[in-house]
Length: 400
Image (cartoon, rainbow, N blue to C red):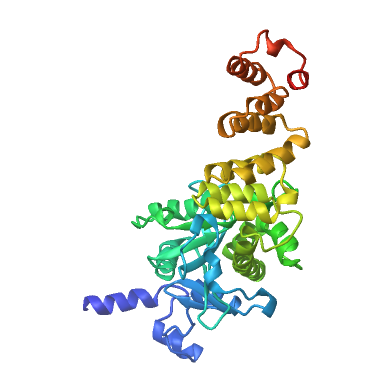
């Protein structure tokens, strides 16, 4: 008996063992498997978020068209100290939704939103969503392709959070691109500078409400975004992720709207009592645009405090506008400013060569400036005695 025949006899003797062809015949089916393979996660999530799956990453594309009141000429977008002269830059608005708010190696961006101005007006918003951890490299590659090399990035707190986090993920994925080296306008600093002295906080939603009149309804708080992604990973439940995508979309639109409004604030044409003209002017001054600073301070001169007015007078002095500087110092002196008194004393002593008038203001300066200035003026006038020992305010009267 052949080996094959012996094996057949042995198989037939095993209880419950039936030849495959016999089982298939009794079942009325063929041995081949007809079950459909499960759908990939990217396609499933893309359907849930009304996007499309591109190489394992979900992309959602939406357009936004502003109301007529929101329309601002694009050339005005560079009228801010940090980006002055950028003109028709490729402005890219960016916002991330992450697995945690503390940063660190274990935190990644599972959704990154990008918005760009359209030639016909409005914005095109593109959101990149991770269907799983293994797709991160593909997401980062697609994100970089979308941003391009010559973009000017605009964010809200992106300097401290979004860009460092994305840069860390690029390094972990061995992608040799330095996002942090690109030109970057962080609007949080622009808003803080203009309003932090008069607002309780400068969060994005506070700026939306106070400047744009936009109040979110049924918005998913950013702190709940990590749980929404976990619900997708563990249970394939994308309902909360839909709300995260909507939250991210509104963040991007608000960024663009704020960017359109802030140049008017920084140039003084936006009239509001809560704008800190002094701080905004100093930002222009620090960036090297002192004439812009003076124009802004002049437009809100009635709202300037002592420090702001002294900065304005100092700018006039540097530009040789002595009459204007004197007028500002005199106004401050009448309000009781000892610093303005010192400036006036120096002005009359050195510029107008009027030591008696200089003594009048030196007499009310704070110590030790009072004693030092009176001593030098006393020598110039050849007056005997120690004028600095006299009570403040009495020297000028005695000299008249």
